[in-house]
Amino acid sequence: MFLYAYVDILAFFKPGVVDGILVGVVWEFDISQTLLTVFLALMAIPILMVVLSMTLPARANRITNIIVASVQVPFAAFNAVGESWTYFYGLGVALEVILLALILRYAWTWPRTVGDHGDHGDQPGP
Figure 1 (cartoon, rainbow, N blue to C red):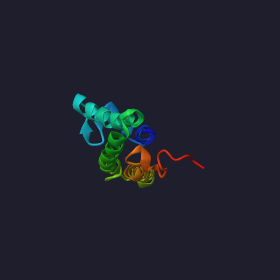
Figure 2: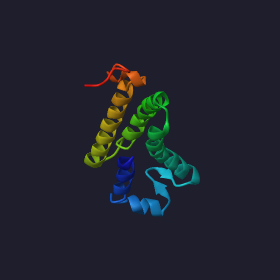
Figure 3: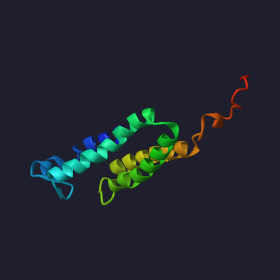
Figure 4: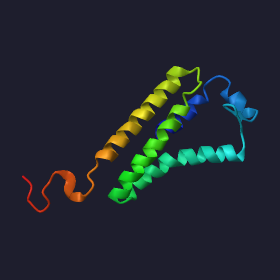
């Protein structure tokens, strides 16, 4: 979640970005209510996932994390497409994709039921 925000915030330091914003343009898009609503919706996804990961039942949590992480990878990659600042955006995208891959791996390998943790249910531990 923080990587999305910090990459966007740090991008303001790129020459010309603030000038574009002041004349109503972000990247190649005219600033509009629709554009800002889309940006907010995209930023809300990782924010909501923090809450949902703590509150959803295990099965729903697993499925939601797999779906959302899979969908977020192309959004992360979009930031680097056509950018001349490849180090900055490349590092941001690489970190985002690595973290999303870890989320996918952990969600994919999560135990499907409480007894799948390797313990034997009612048997006492060591």
